[in-house]
Length: 153
Image (cartoon, rainbow, N blue to C red; front, side, top):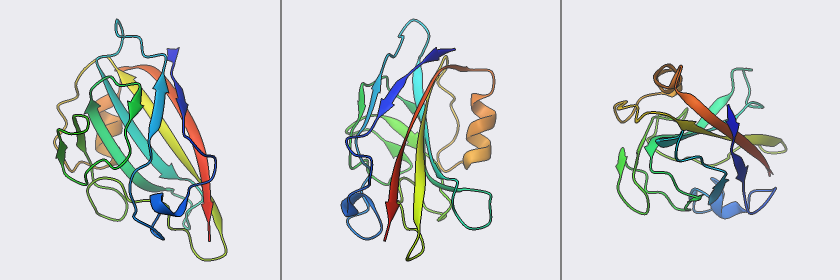
């Protein structure tokens, strides 16, 4: 599997990307895409530090075009056509699209942006959850990279 180099502009979320601000998705840089291997991108943003020990999904998006930057402020719609094309799933807040960090007061959590290069367009229906996305990607992940940012009140 070939590595993707995934990065964010900051190591700590500014409030605008969280429930304390505008709650918009941040820009995510994705370098090293091999267009001979990858046909689409998928992203999973989760918080492994959430209470309960099962993690908390903040964002699912798949069947994205191959871009070097997933731009900020992706609309919270099931099917996105601008600023990039892709399909979004249901996060742990039971909402479609990105819902930013919102840890309990006094806690700082880690948020992992996991980006997958897939050798297919999954065709997975909008609104699917993490388990459905993982199942649709099984056997089709040809590139992978991740980065992490923190946030706390």
